[in-house]
Structures are given as C-alpha cells and as structure tokens.
Image 1 (cartoon, rainbow, N blue to C red):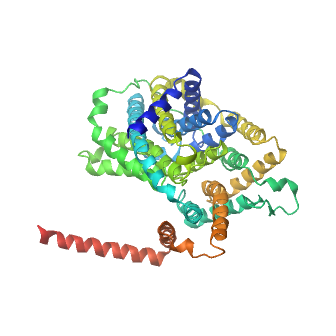
Image 2 (cartoon, helix red, strand yellow):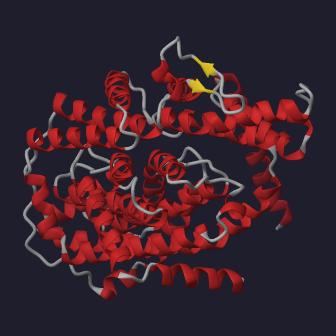
Image 3 (cartoon, rainbow, N blue to C red):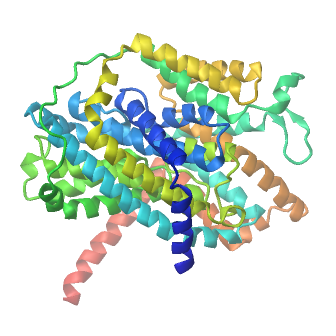
Length: 511
C-alpha cells in the first residue's frame, strides 16, 4: 500500500511542470470543444489527437489523450443543456432535466451542477482506478500464450455489445478488423499475407490512418450529408454552483459514482449506460419523482455523475486486461499501443509505474474540466456558432495531415480515404466503427498467441481448453455469444425468474 502511495506521489511530481500542465489544459480544451460540437465525439477527439501527438514523449501524449477523453464527455453536456442535443451519446440522459432548467432561465445553474458532479465523480473513479487496477493486473500476470488467445477472443466477442443494438453487426465489424490486422507481414516469420503482390500492403494497415479514417473522415462525410443547425439558449445566470446545493445531493453523487465505475468495469457497456442507470436509480429512490424530466437537479446530477465516473471504470480493464469497455477507451488503448505502451497483463512488468501515472493524468484531467467548466463556459460556447461548412473541411485537413505524418507514406492517406469512405456507407447502414478498431488492435495479439500456443503444445488444442484461466475465459466467451441466441436467452431468463421466485418464497419462512 505504502509503495503504491509513493509511486502515486512520484507520478504527481513528474507532472508538476509548466509544459506538462499546458499539455493537460490543451488536451482538455480540445476535448471540450469536440464535445460541445454536436456530432463530434470523444472517440474522434482521441483519434485526431493521436496523430498530432505522435512526436511527443509517451507520458505527455497520453496525458493529452486522457484529458481530451474526459473533456469531450464533459463538454457534451453543454449542448445537452443549451440545445437539447447531446454532444456525445453519454450526455443524452442530461437533456431532459438540463434543457428543462435552461428553459426556466437557469442554464448557468444547470451547467454549474453538471460541472461539480462531473468533477467529484471523476475523482471518485480515480480512487477506484488507483485501488483496483494494480490488484487486477497482478492476478493477470499468470497469463501465458493460451490465456492471451482467449483474452483477445473475448475482447472481440465484446464487439457485439460495445456500441449499437445489433450484436451481429458488431461481430461482423470485429471480424473485419481482425482480417485487416492480418494484412501484411505476419508476426513470427515475416511472411506476406493478403498482399496480392502489392508491396505497399506488406506493411499492413497502420492504426492511425485506420482510426482517422473510421472516425474522422466518416464523421466529416456524415455531418456534411445531414447538417443540423440549432439556436443556442441564452445563459444569463451564474455558472458557479452553490456549495450547499452540491452537498445536499451527496448520496446521489456517491450512488451514481459507484454505478458509473461498475458499468465501466463491464466490457461492452458504454458511458451512456452509466448515465442512464444512474438516472434511473436516482429517480427510483427520489421523493420527487414527478420532477424528473421537468428540471430536477437530482436527475441532472445523477446523469452527469454516472457518465463521468464510468471513464476511470473503463480504463481499469483497459490497463489491466487489455479489454476496452467503450468506443473511446478502445481508441485510447490503440493510441497507447502506438505510443509504445501495451495495455494488458504484462503492463506491470514492462511499465510498473504507468498505472499510477494514468491515475495522476486522470486527476489532472478532472481539475482542468473544473477550471474550464466554471471560468471558460461563455467563451467556449462561441464554438457552436462556427458553421459546419467551415469546420468540417478543417477536420478533413487534420485527418489527411495526421494520416501522412505518422510514417510519411502516401499509401496511408489512400488507406485513410478508403477506410473512411467505407465507414461512411457502413455507418449509414447501422454498422459502428469501434468494433473494427477493436479487431485491428486485438488481431495481432490473437494471431501471435494462437500460433505460439500451438508451437508450445506441439499442435495440440488441449491446453486451450484445460488450463484454469482458459476454461473461465472460454466459458464466459461462449456464454456471451449464446446470450444473443433467442432460445438460450429465454431459457436463462426463465431460470433466473424461477430462482428469484424460489428465494422470495423462502425468505418469509426464515423470518
């Protein structure tokens, strides 16, 4: 414990210099701007900033990305309150009560409540991040090639639920990502695969062009194809929250913080789930249920606390197991790999202090959103007045420059254009891009682990199904897939209902 506190203190001291603080403020600022603009997302912010931070030192680059992640989810509540349009999907739960307060002339009050809830809940999530990640990572150190294979396969299986409502489409995109990861020279013997005689494909598809194309260019095309212009609500009252008002809802903050972290720990459950579950829980225990949806401070506080607390929750399995829980955390994980940090069970051996550095980064990110949220709201809202026809070409230029700058290959620009155009048409058909990126990230790990395991077992598949951790992961993976089969799902629901009825029948007898 004391060693952990010492490592955390050293991590904090390493960030206490003007340049690092400037990186953190800059990352949070860009994230908030991206979150404020409807249609742009935390995923896009991380993807674009990955290209712009490629030359920075690893810690500085990841600090910028984490601050942009936190800032984007926080910034999305501005448009939810002022426009009734969630800046990101996670802020949808804030629309009902936030916009209702704005309609009553209390937009500043609503933004102040959202800011204080976001700050406190992020700090609560950081505490959980510092507590649970090292313990989970130490357990994961017993992983070998066989366990890594099932871990990667489980991660791809989660692509069915990471975004969207159609698991089949998620799995198809995850499999497409796995296929793209196999293009080029394979990892053990450097033989060309799926290159079809084209030398440019020998290097495979780089992650950054794929990220920028799937999220950046596709978002530009989607926005220009269906632009939405709304008039923002005037904000006349103060955004500084009343301390007594915030303290009054401490139960809501604590309850929603726990729900947010727990939903973040579950792979495939996004930040929006944390917000909605927290909102539902607050309404269930509230004495003023009729006020929810009409300007309830309790409802707004619960929604903002739940989605922001889920950010550290998503980072925990991402760092310890290498399994991202949401679309932004999947892109953040890819960015960490690009910057030389491999999340997963080996992280405690290769970068033993990195977890505490991430804790310090996330804490700094929560402080930056508090500063911008209380003292920079009005200037930031001018971003909403920038026409889409002006903003989107700028984003396209950043996509092109970012794709080319990483390796100075024109092929990467062509790959970005091809992936982005394909992603645009796929998104219009309901296919999400986060599973594609997840498949590309986990593809090399799955391929190498499978082949190394077969080498160690002389071609036998038996160890993949007999080792204890492998049995657990195989069972969870198969069970997850079967849950989407209607007959099996009905059977599970029936068994759960019967067990619940039996327990209810037994409880009175015990009393």
